[in-house]
Length: 86
Image 1 (tube, one colour):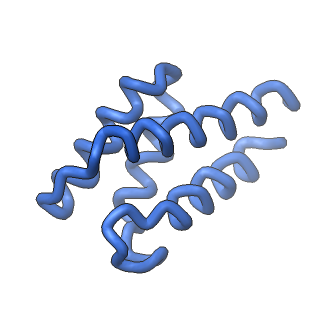
Image 2: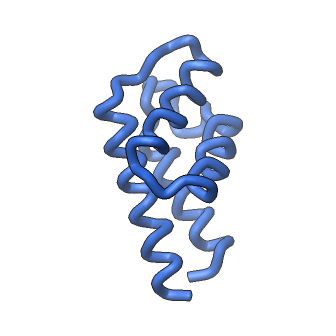
């Protein structure tokens, strides 16, 4: 899987997540920031904190850390699977 395909899978996972129930197309900026964070981080807890901060900054809503950790693990699995197939 190439980087573009990996990024598309990351975007899809984040759109499906919809943490505040605003609809899958409501988070364009936050999704871009999260995809960048995935490229920079490998630790699920660090990524979860980053994701929580991204959404809290934009929406002034603190998403439960368990939800952030679950999505961070999913995103890192996509990243790991992409790097294994390169």
